[in-house]
Image (cartoon, rainbow, N blue to C red; front, top):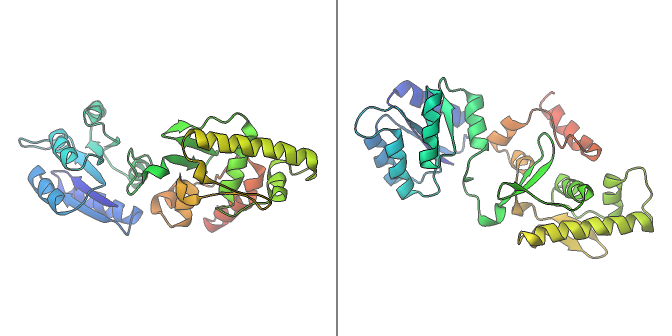
Length: 267
């Protein structure tokens, strides 16, 4: 991703760039100590995120600069940098993604990167967001997906956990009902939850996210999701930093993946 940090104190700019390089080593991270220099940089490079100090001296403070940058990059994520909590309210003037209170830490920057309003490089088809770290949750345009049955949500979690692999009825029944046989009764129950899952995604015009092959099984198109677990597998430094040992904590079937992640982190 492309970031720009603007603060009249060079030490803060340097510190921010160091943190950003640690969190996103493959990104481009620029810095400026004046609004003029920031505008010049913005003309030469695309921007995904701008970290802007509110209290910069001169005719153009951070809020004014943010408005100029927004005209050039309407989807730009603005994150306000301030030493005073009362200034955070000014973030709303820019429809900002968030704010950082000084002193800035790696943890607070990582959190802001995680909750960006506009994900860098995110296409329209990735409006479905999946959270695996902690408890499993699924969102569409940041609102929870509305499942008719809790088992439908659990079915989606099982499919996400299998990372795009087509799962047979026996595998899915083993996830949802580990102590029950894969007989006609449980298969009928499974069909009900598969239908509900497909209906939920059809409702948000994302039916292609569910891959259903008759007599073979069901899976998901991983490219249709913005998922912390998938980004972790791709080496996304923000997702790696986010993992704290919990993965789909409400589901027993996720224990194998959970243990693998924990062992990788020596947790």
